[in-house]
Image 1: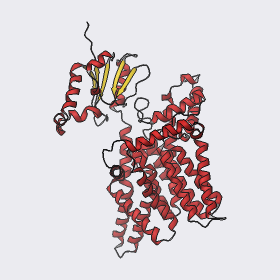
Image 2 (image 1 turned 60 degrees about the horizontal axis):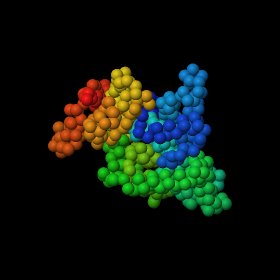
Image 3 (image 1 turned 45 degrees about the vertical axis):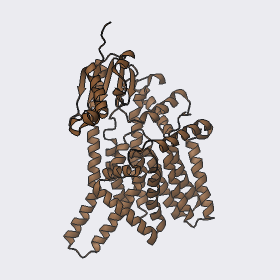
Image 4 (image 1 turned 90 degrees about the vertical axis):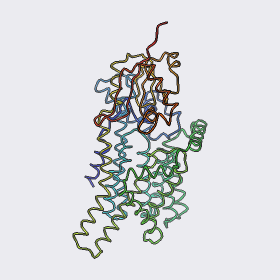
Length: 498
């Protein structure tokens, strides 16, 4: 197990600084800027309720430690001198620690089956590419997954101990999950199922009430402004719900999520996990020890069903499923190994089959995770463009950029558009824009002749070509094996003197 934890930590800390400060993950500032604002203003009301506040508070405490460390090193002597950019690396380290700790939680939960299942499940989760990737960012999904896995472990423990206190502790873990990310609050079904299916003293009703009360109490402690600023919370939460219900659906959400899982697990891992789900369902109906199988088999199905009905889909929303899928996959492999050992096959054949099965469960996802880290550690085109802009474009210049792939310092007057073509060249000139930065992630499909882009998207192609023709290209950053990322073009608007 120590080697598994070490591998998990290496994968999650490798390339941790990538993109700081010029290209952080799209939602990282939503957490980090508010955490830093809390320590600078003393106002712990986030005034923002797209996320609950637990992880913002964790990041605020981390920011305090980072600020004091920076002050001790002479980097600044007042809070106002510390930019938000200086806090990202420490904040990401907290996420990486939470991601690594979840591996240990999975192992402890797996011991409720047996040591082989526990160790294999921990190894599978340690190298899970989707979890490895998201453990690099200051986002709520990885810590929420930690608390969901903790709710599972404590629910299993409560079933063993059969005490009200144990079920209350499991409920509190579910409340902390909800206090980290709202959808993680679905973990409440874990201790509730345990309470309803366990002969607890003094009664199952008391255990159920303890679960609900502890969950609600924990949530309100870590997200108090959902009540203290109730009107703002209700308004923003209603808007959030409407966005998830009314956003345009480009493809069936369930199909999109299944593709994300397949890409992360690869085909061998996908087959193993599917076999684990089938085994779990079989054990639910045939036993023995049905409760633990119910918890790990039904929760991922229930959770997947809920998120698949929403119209906004991000791969990271799948993270709370992964501890359960790792446990199910590990249980399926252990069952297959036992079956092979009982089979009347030559011993060398059995040994090769067992080793091959274990390697298929771990090696493909580990390769994908390492490839992500190795790629992230390279100098991307976004970093090249960022450095060039700071060196070659004077501070105070007015710059308009496509998307938010590059975040310029406040010393530039920067505007961000989904696509440069949404405005005309004359509008840029009228607004005093001096530079445009175009990204192939936006213009690429329209200019890709190999896929027929200019013919399929004639209007969009013409819009971009007019912008390129009316501006002066002063720099271009083309992706390569050494420098991944989008192609970026820096365009200068040259004004004609009246």
